[in-house]
Length: 409
Image 1 (cartoon, one colour):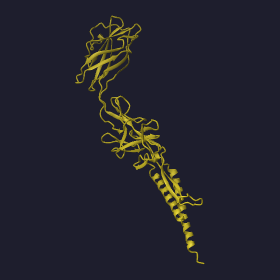
Image 2 (image 1 turned 90 degrees about the vertical axis):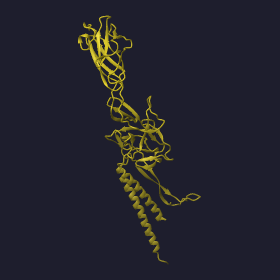
Image 3 (image 1 turned 180 degrees about the horizontal axis):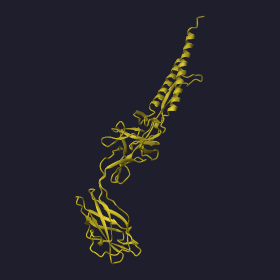
Image 4 (image 1 turned 60 degrees about the vertical axis):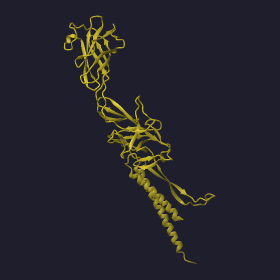
């Protein structure tokens, strides 16, 4: 009997050493979670229960319990490396079969999909046309490498001051080549539907009558836009009164690039007539040229955006996360991945920063949560347990030999 008891102790201690060895072997495995051997005593059961004087039948390994404590986060130089701080798992799809991981060392495959080291696709939510994300269904996250389409200028805003002391030019009509035919001018860059840049030039001419009236004319690439100048009228306190909403449409201009005609509206609502100096405070327009991708950014909530050289950005999707009622019940699958099981409960999907989920840090990875010092101390303890049970076998053998050698009376 003692042999069997000690043997169960040796087997349990050996399992404990194996668990510790596996923890130490994965001390540098990204996203790895350490395990712990847990033990339970054995008793012979009868219909009437266990006797009060029962010694017991030894020990057994009741569970190899996974420990999902947070690992340290280390910064990297790769924006596609993602670290989870807090609860949750990244969702990986292998041809529709879902696995879960804390290893966020991702990359882009030849088709632009965000994948793990084994080629499984990272799951996320697609963006909606009116904003937000389609959180009703998971899908493969794909990072676009296409150019950003251009946008023709349709609206411009300008904040400026025209001098109240200005006198009307003596030479008429307006001629951009003759500075004596206008009072002041300023320029801006506008874009057509093909993304080609054009130079827009605004000319301001003070009128003799009525008082506080100016004519504004727009030229694009040296060609006058529209049928003629537009009138800006100011009050005696210098505020713009006409047009009432401050918006002026100069008409259409057809570029020589083959693009659609430009129809631009200028907002002069911030224009003033003060003092004796002309000045432009700000000028902006809503057009932009074609853009090439410059990089991918992933926010703390998992929103993936592509940035382009034309200053634009495009939302590509949002990284999806999963959590479980009992993470310790997850089935280990290798490659630092887990699968859903009956014990874990069903996966609850969500996003980083949501209820029950941690946040995502881009350009970082979560290290293994194995503490080397703790494991080495535990290894010594398990080794002593092994030695003690082996000594028990030796002692039992000595007793057995002594009994065998008792002479007959």
